[in-house]
Image 1: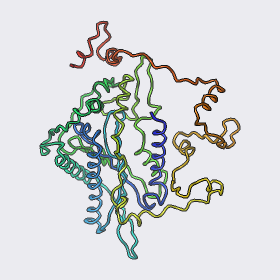
Image 2: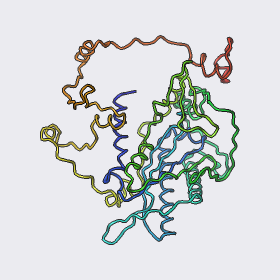
Image 3: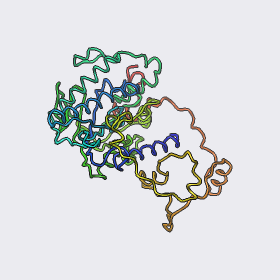
Image 4: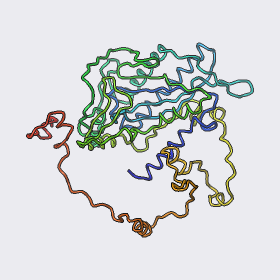
Length: 428
């Protein structure tokens, strides 16, 4: 992975984590928060994964449905005419790294309404019941399917079974199409996988099903809204935003087994009892590659009073606090056009990885940057001084197709000397 890309991603994520934490960044400190998690059927995940504009449109439909629910509920039941706001984060992976585009919406749990003097007053939603969430899920499902029908993605949306229309992506980008389709289902080349579980048979039913308090599902769509944060809970806000902006996999849950397979430990067991998934290393790389979002595809969407075009945003979001006075020497080094409010790299590393690069490991004193090596000759001279190699490692020789010797397949089909050909295994 490009180090520059990863550091830029780290900087953006660290800055967004403070969106609901520090007053004056995104939301007023008087507004409690509620998280809405929306997932989509398997049949739609493949198309939503590579079509960034389509996924953005679906996110807008979901945001409008949730904000409309708050607007109607507060108006009809509490007599308050106002608007709410939301920040929606697109996550692209399951706990086992399968491709699963879904939405984490951090919503102001209430509405802002005008008051005397031109100010805005926040009115929280008193309570949210599971029946109201079930109605909201049906609204989201119907509106999303109608939107996909207008865009020419599906047809026969009035029936439980959907027909996906071909958009020609498989012909234009056959490798990416095959990779995305396989990553959704766990088939070749993003599989196979070995699930560590006892055999359990599960059945689903049509119609709205309540799976937990404030958690409902219907025809592949699911909606969860049980996570809330009080307005004065700063640590809870940061924890919620960290969760919504988390990377797809924590490093401590990834293990290399003695037989060469890679094990992904699940944070929570699946419904069928799966606690871990074993993959070939190449299958893991295929799943990671499929998680890369399409180019020019935004993963964070602002809606309602938090949107950039909202007339109430300036009243809801107060101006940021004044920055403390900088040292004259440091201020002189910055150009007059400097507008960046990003955090330094040292602070990002300390907050994200708990690595304090400015602290001496021997005496604990604070360190100061003296020089930055960028010239190749200087870098090689420094590496030779440390006794490190200065040349990159040689390229590995070409190898056979990896799935002829898949350890996951051998364990699944049984060890045998006469292993069938790759095409016979997968019906190619």
